[in-house]
Image 1 (tube, rainbow, N blue to C red):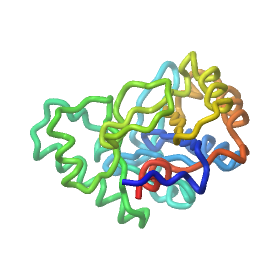
Image 2 (image 1 turned 90 degrees about the horizontal axis):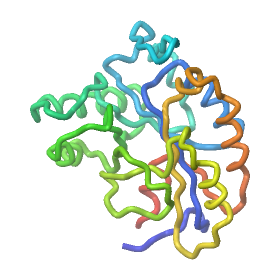
Image 3 (image 1 turned 30 degrees about the vertical axis):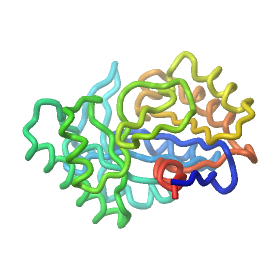
Length: 232
């Protein structure tokens, strides 16, 4: 297996955001403003504004699916199970249906291949990884942050670099930007867009994007673009 740099670049940045909520609209506008690419992980079985949950004092609404195809254009869609199910402890048939049906629905609606997956609640049994392979999933985000940028060999157990609210993210970004490397280095940031409403800190997210944007030595891509196109 040969490592191919991202368009000849040695560094890459990608983002991963979950749940298909209304706050994605504002986040996507920021990503587009700074020419960033992200992957959005969705639950097709509950993708309606009538499906709500509460964080802090904020009522979070998912989006109506009919509005979403155009909104997410230029970004990637990945599976987050059909109903945001906690997969740990579920029988294998249910796990398979949660994953495979969501993939089928998302591929039909967005007319794009679904290659990625994120575990709701960060929980799973080991059998889930075999089921992901059976469903054609090529990479999956798993819980825990590395605070690093080195490539990982198991893409079905891929761990992000930072959650966007990590206390060390700004120093981590500085470290990433200033490093001189001969090996590929990936900064992978994840979160939920509704957290910016709950924490009232959209300006903070924009400061992250400003810091990372428009560097000639960085490739900006979706999760698939940075993970799956690196190895040939």
